[in-house]
Length: 263
Image 1: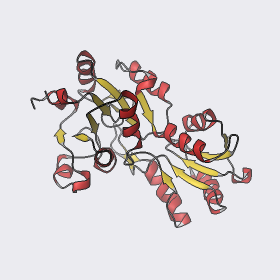
Image 2: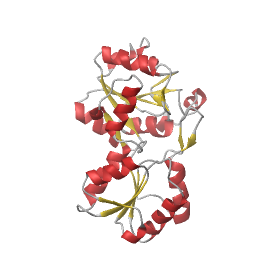
Image 3: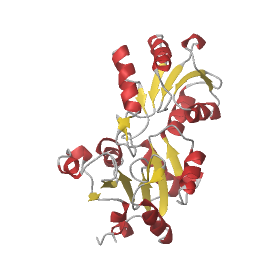
Image 4: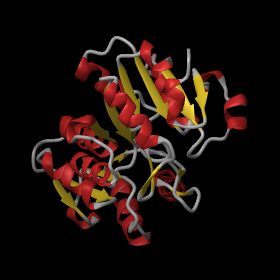
């Protein structure tokens, strides 16, 4: 089987394992088979709206075995980047969900909501309630010199209703107002999440499974890892055919069950 060649499988979540509040077709069966084969798994997501433990609970609620230490999120990566740059207690304006605020607090920084708090940084991640007021405060803070960190720049988020605006769409709105891009983007296609996962387990050969060419597959290539594009989320087969070398997957499959194809 194709998966036999790999000792670590890194899975994107949205569009690969889950779509909104349900499992993607084939995902539960594929993950059960991977567990039976004793494969080491990591879930790596650009979605900053849940903490690792919350992601694991969500998956368990769908009948998918998962633990918090198997989950890597862009919210955790962003908080880590902030903690490396600023002293403990420094104010950080958080634009995003409660999970992102919690990760910022967990590394010893102080989440704030207003530019009047003189934040040293702005961190922006996906949150279903993010609106104009939040973007306005971030705009003022960045214009006043705050370091701007985006958890990711995914333009869309796959859902059962089709692709909806993702964090990248809101980052683009702020970028338009400021006439500049974020100082740092920590999520995919940056290779950090993938490299951290491989380092954690001492993997010799890793396969990344994702539904987006511009984040999952491009990030895998930057990390020097093989990749499988599944057609259950954003990308279609025609997109894979037309992909640039920087975004070309090693394999293409209808869904995660492609991991068990005869190599």
